[in-house]
Length: 267
Image (tube, rainbow, N blue to C red; front, side):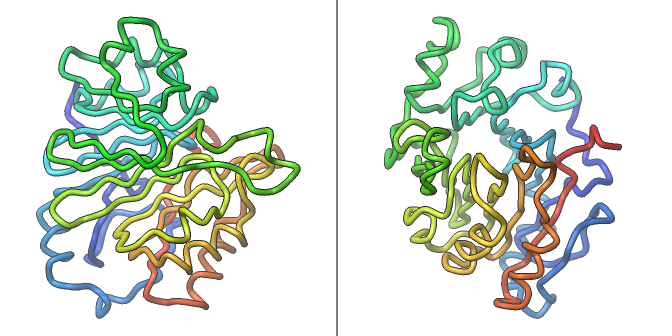
C-alpha cells in the first residue's frame, strides 16, 4: 500500500500541545503550559498519528507500527495506507466488522485482535490470523500491551444493542503511553475507573451508545489528557460534539478535546 497520507482534516495526533494540522471544527481546550516535556518530545518525533476513516474506523501509526481499528468500507478505503501490522475489532455490528474489507487488507504479517463473538463470524483463513481476547484479557504484541475493556449498554431501552461480554474496548500501552478506544459502550464503571490514559477515543450516539452528557461525565471522571469524540452518528444525525467539548472545558480545562472529521462523506 502507499505511504500514509496525513491530510488536512487533522490526522496529526499529539500527546503534547504543539501546533498540529486540524480541521476547522477542531476544539483546542488545553493551553501549552499544561504539557509535559516528554509529551512534547513524543509529538515532535511524530511517533503517533491518527487518521479517521469514518465513524468507528481509524488508522493509527505508533512508533512505526500501523494499526487499523474496526476497518470497514471496503479495501479501497485503505489503499493510501501502509499495510496493517495489527487490526483491532471491537464488535460484530457492520460498522465495526466487514469480512470483505478484512480479506482485502490482511497480509501474512497482520495480526487481528478481536472478541470471540467476532472470531466466530470470520472465515477460517481470518480466524487463523486472529487472537481472541475476552473482557479483561491482556495480550502482548508488537511491543504493545493490549487490554480488552468491557463495552456494553446500561440504559434499559438500549440493553438489546450491546450485552456485556460480547464486545471489547481496548487500552493499548507502549513506553508508558496509554490509549483507550471505547468501542460501543455507555459510561460503564470499567470506563470510569480507567487510570493514566493519555488519549481516549469515546463514542456518543443514540440510541446505540450514550448521550453526550454521559460521555462527558465519564471523561471527567477518568481524566484522559486528550479525548477524541468519535462514533457520534445516531439515528437522528450527529451528536453535538461541540456541547461535549464545552462541558469538558468548563469542568476541567486540563483535558484537551480534539475534534476530527469522522464523516467526510457529508462534504
